[in-house]
Structures are given as structure tokens and as C-alpha cells.
Length: 400
Ligand code: C5P
Image (tube, rainbow, N blue to C red; front, side, top):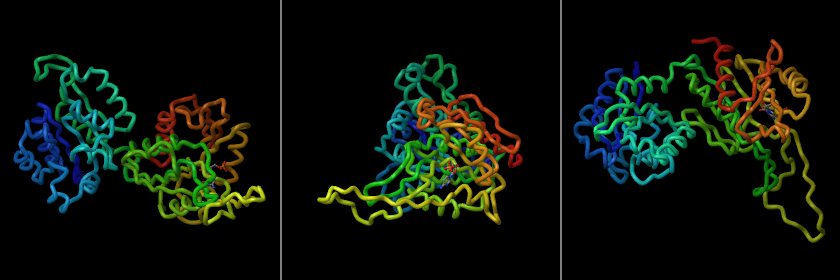
């Protein structure tokens, strides 16, 4: 059942749009509310009146409809849903999404949303197989967009092959899965990610090379298991995943504050590469060279250890506290010592020596250090490491 789930349904301009009317009806039968958006091309296939009648809601049609803006702005509209579904997703809509166009209501909503997006592609088989569409599909998948179908079969245009929009029950199953009744449903998990920037003066800072890739993948994997994720991220290169609560910070002190504000949580995972020190004598105005040629002397002070602080909380400590240890030598020994020192339950240790290509790279090879000892995992894509770790977190918290 999809009781009380809110779906923003973007209907693209394809012959399969007629199936989307049935999709609206069946979603409502399951208890969901559906806010429909029609592209201009979609109006050639279904009428706003029938769409609105089936949804029992206003249909949104044009970005520049000022009445709509007064009722609900497009940014708000894009976020007032649990899931954004694009059905049918035409080749054109997919191309727009992949390239970040925002020149009509549908594409603008898709750019502005902070929710997960599920597409049900539908197009002629040649269009589906065209390298441009396949390229766009790969980009969209990389962006975390979920894809249902297309099916193979006879098409309205008379050709045969993949390109038919999935049948409505299959799209509903994909929606169900996306809205996740996973083992972490209802559980709150805090994840820190990315580097921190510690200012020297208003224009200069000290940072590190963390891309935030592992933290973002982990947040996405926890979300996929149904967790509510508070994702506290420094200025990372990798964008945060959709469908998590993003709290952007810059410095370690801000990260500590954001983590404190996110409690209570059942698990807290500290994947951020927090700067150990900040500049104590940071200047409030831009530092200038002076005639003497003397370089300024920076004085450092230690940042709060966020992980240790949470691991050693007197009251309200998350049941599971996980730290990361980026090491360049004696990985297991150093990481085990760190686990004891910080008081966390697990340490995810990895070798970040430059020759491993792990820091900022697509793969990771970790050693998971728990009460039971050190477990060496094979070298895997960061997404796979994240999925395995999320699964372990679910097991540790006990399935719902
Ligand atoms: O001590 P070290 O920086 O190697 O420990 C790494 C682990 O501690 C990571 O999980 C990191 O997110 C966390 N950490 C923290 N606050 C700090 C320093 C590290 O949460 N100030």
C-alpha cells in the first residue's frame, strides 16, 4: 500500500501517456495522492481535464502560470512529494534531465527537486537504442535516477522491441520499492561526509582531498534500505544523494554543531575527512603581503573530535557509532587503536596511500574493525562498499 504517499507525476508527450491516467487511478486506489504535471506535448495525448478529474487535483501545466506561482511555487511543488515519477519519460525528457535543461515546468521541477526521481521510459525502439538515449540513461542512473522498464513488445508505431512503457502494476511495484519498506524504515541515521574547510582568512582555507564519494554512497545505500538519513556534508566534490536531509557545513566546528542538532539517531556514521586543526589566528580580512617579505605564521588549534564526542556521549548515544580511518601504513593496527581511543563500535579502515588511488577514486578496499576483529573486504566500487556496509548497519540495529 502507498497510504499517504505523495507522488508528483510528470506526464511526458508520448502515446503511452494514456497509461498514466490508469497509473493515477491505481496509485489513488492504493492510498497515494497524485499531483499531475503535463508537458505541452503530453496535452496532445491526454487532456488536462481528464488528468485532473482522475487525480482529483489541479493539473500543473505551465511554468509561467502566475496563478500557480501564487498558489504554490515550482520549487515548493518539486519538493512537496515523497517521490517524483516521470511516466512516460520520452527521449526528449530524458535528454533534458540528463543535460540539466529547465525551460518548462516539468524540466524545472526535475532540476529543483530534492526527492528521488523514478522514470518509466517510453519511446520507439530505435530511439531507445540510439546511443544518445543510452548515454543519457547512463548519466541519469549515475545521478541516482531510478528506472522502471521499458518493456519489450509490439509498439504503437508498429515496430517491435524495447521501448514500451512498463505496465502500470510494474511501475507501481517500482514506486513501492523506491518508497522503501526496507529493514531501516523509520530509523534515523546521521552520516557525515566530505572534507571540511578551515579558513585562514575570508578567501583562503585549509582543506583535504576527500571527494565525499564514499559518504554520499553510504547515505544513498542507507536511504535505499528505508532509513531517514541526516547527511551532514562539508564542501564535497560529489553532490549529495536525493532523498536524504542535507545539512551543508564548511568547518569542523559547524559540522560538530550540525551533528549535535541532528540527534537523536540510532546510528551515526562518520565518513567525513574532518580537519584535525583549524587556524586559531585566522584573519577577519584578507591577509596581505608586506614589504618585509615575511610570511605570516599560522597558529593551529585542535578541532573538536566529532566522532569521539558522539561515541562517548553520556546519554542518548546512538546504538551504533561508526568511524572511518584513512591510513597510509599499519592500517589494521592503527585503526584498531583508533577504535579503542575514540570509543566507537566499528572502524572502517582503508589505505589511502597515493598509489592505491582510493582517495577521490571510484573504488575502495576496506577493513571493517568490530568487536569480533578485523574483516578484510575485497576491493569494490564505493557504491558496493556502501551497500554492504548499509546492510551490516541494518543487521546491527536489528531488522524492523
Ligand atoms: O582521528 P582521525 O581523523 O584519523 O579519525 C577519523 C575518524 O574520526 C573519521 O570517522 C572522522 O570522520 C572522525 N573525525 C571526527 N572529527 C574530527 C576528526 C575526525 O569526527 N575532528
